[in-house]
Amino acid sequence: MVRLRPNQRWSLVILALILGSQLYCIGHAQTQSPLQSPLQSRLHPNGSTGSIGSASLIGNSTDTRSDQDISPGWPYVFDESGFHFYSLVPPKVLESQIQGVLRLPDELNQELGITLKGLNVHILVFDSRRSLDEYLHRYYPGLRAANSMYIRDQGPGLILTWFHADWLVDVRHEATHALLHAKRVSIPLWIDEGLAEYFEYPSGSSSGESFAIKSHPVHTKLIHTQLRFGQFANLEEQERWDPNKRLSNQQYRDAWGSVAFLLNHSDQSKEEFRSYVKDLLENRASGNLSYRLQQTIPDWRTAYTRYYREHSVASSIR
Image (cartoon, rainbow, N blue to C red; front, side, top):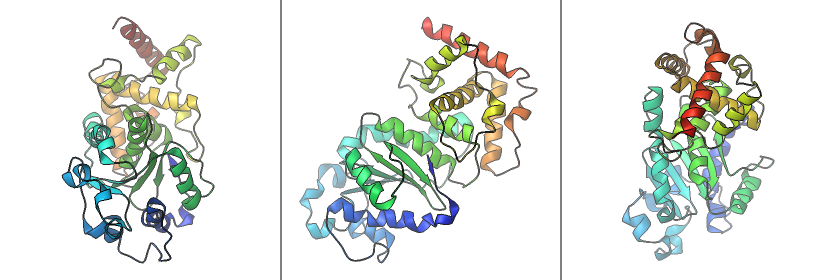
């Protein structure tokens, strides 16, 4: 996730980014400022919108429209369940994977016991890494490029991504950030990234589990290796992570490990974690979770280590 400093007035920049991106998408130079036209008419040519599976988007290519009809919008624009897609990739190509994005809010609601309302997430889908890099160079000079990124500011969540083999995983990760920050509250970095890692794989997509996010194709193996060296994720250390610093791979592992442990160790640990997340999202004073867990999990290291060792044995005989 990319965090921007409050004093940079990114609200206007994000609006200009979505609106002004038309210049790149259609390949025509225009002298009119992208902020001179209403948002709805700029993003939805002729004031029309579509949805996944609609004949207007999948059955009929935008090539059948005149240049005047296409300009000045993205080639493909469609809304679905609070997600607004602006794409250089045809919806027919995205269709099978987008369902995994649309299910994400329900998965968060079910697992965390929360209710996400009024979703408003914008996703810009580029057709190549090069096109995304060129876009970033134009609108976010100096921003480090990644396959996908979430840009958080005062306005709606904005996700920039290009269509690649792990597109769904990356978009679900960034969309988790966007959904958690919809209320614009402060969330500890270890929870923010831990939940994004936890939900990035759709349920039932790996490891043969009914709810596959209990395991992770990378982090689970790394944690088992970590335990062999007597190491573990230290929750109190995670609570001191600097939100302005980029996490290392080891920190992503530990963030996922702590979140997965709390949600699956016991009913008591899950309820304590869910209660803490609810307090965060409602902007209630919450303190540190490690303090609230002292009765539920008096010995974090022993409980954490035992859980993943038992999980390792269960996985080996599955």
